[in-house]
Image (cartoon, rainbow, N blue to C red; front, side):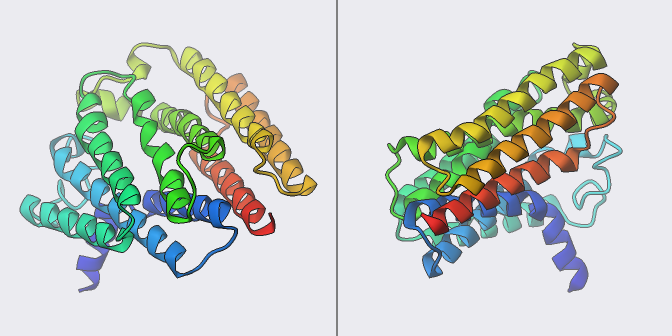
Length: 281
């Protein structure tokens, strides 16, 4: 039983799904000014949808995962679960997530749009172009919007557009930083990668620009009324400077000094500040 649970956690990529869940909570709190049982249901729904999409992605890419050192020990290529069972688990998680979002059909529509985009557009596009991460960034922009509509917000509100734009911009260098570490693995698996198009220095400079864009996008959230106190605004500025400092270190060393986890920490800081702003407004 413990092993089966561990396999489900690996299939669902729970750490990535957890970040989506937290961005849902931030969107909900920003729209409603608080958190309640509906916020928990929305977060759980998106978490399960994200886990299901990740499991479906592993089903789709099981052949590629089996050729990469980084992923060959995942449940499918290692043979710990059959493709049919993985597909069934993905379907169960996605249906459970959908049930959690009922009766908000706007949230369900956004959730399933994200799944279609991630598994139907981004996943096959990765086999075609090394620039798939750019359209793939849409996936990170939707979860806060789901939280927003569940909290009673209007999708036409420019505030949620600003939040979603931040996550879109952040997600692209987030992937490219990972690529700097495992690009050779992707290339050996036959995937088109930017490291085969650009030198490490060139890719570092491109990623640097996107990281600065994410820093600017985080500070600009205050322009949309998303910083309810001066110290939250100061927090956005401090986080942006911190990211810019690490991005500059990465540029000087062609990628070795900016760890992948630091971009995740930056996103968590922004999510925390947005949530605090919602509670204090």
